[in-house]
Length: 100
Image 1 (cartoon, rainbow, N blue to C red):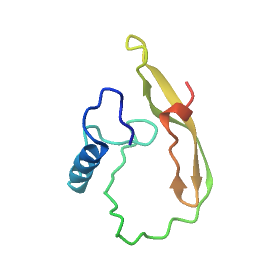
Image 2 (image 1 turned 180 degrees about the vertical axis):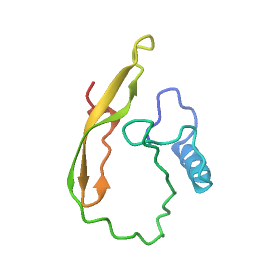
Image 3 (image 1 turned 120 degrees about the vertical axis):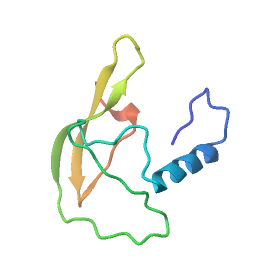
Image 4 (image 1 turned 90 degrees about the vertical axis):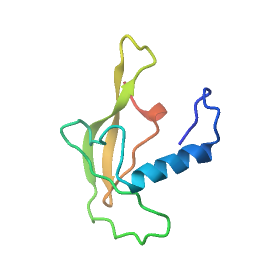
């Protein structure tokens, strides 16, 4: 989580707000995998929760939509990343590491 220059509250406030909402399964927008037709379900994984073993699969998933870049509000541009499944996990890069 990164704060913007407009933020006046400490990071811990936002982290606690996120955790409180995520424990209840609440989100502003339903997360999705690449496009909204592929909705993702989520649960908050607490640090003391034992982790199940990842699935044993590694492969390329191709280009996936990360988000829209609103730096020019009149013309938002899609930003993509080359998604890879590595031992059952997909690492999502920071927005600054995506391509237009």
